[in-house]
Length: 169
Image 1: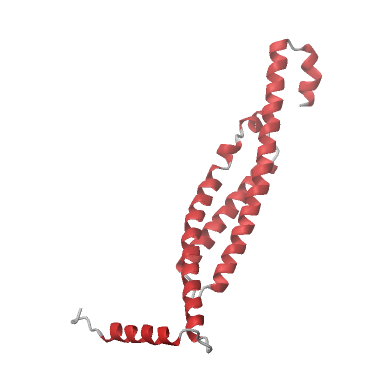
Image 2: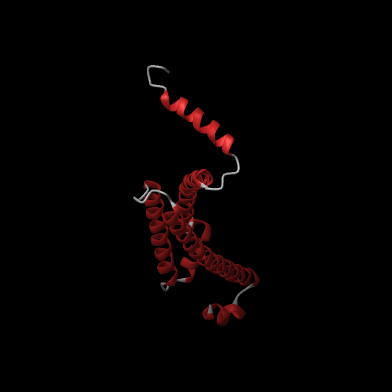
């Protein structure tokens, strides 16, 4: 940039426009990369926090397979992030910086994020289902029942259902 600044007075209008366009592109790429660095780091932190919350609240005490998949995917996202930070922190020529399109540079991170989003959506559905069952169990175990007749009817219907064998069906 300093060379460009020194030589700009010697350039014709077309070359000055090319230099200005290069500076604008460089500034835009750097700004977008900084934005993606901040945003993607926050995404990783938020997803790790969400995963730990779900891990603590799942009823099953053994490790759920989706938790392992989401955890592995988060590790992959962290590796991509660290690799991109390392690449951006290395000294590079202006030409290479101009060619670093942030949309392409962060493409692998976005792909991993999309996969993580699908996995976390399924994991949240499982956690939500278990939460509903826990609420139902809490209601049924509540000592001061508000609907004893309804509970008796539910229990009798459940006993009838449980009494059927495979051959009866």
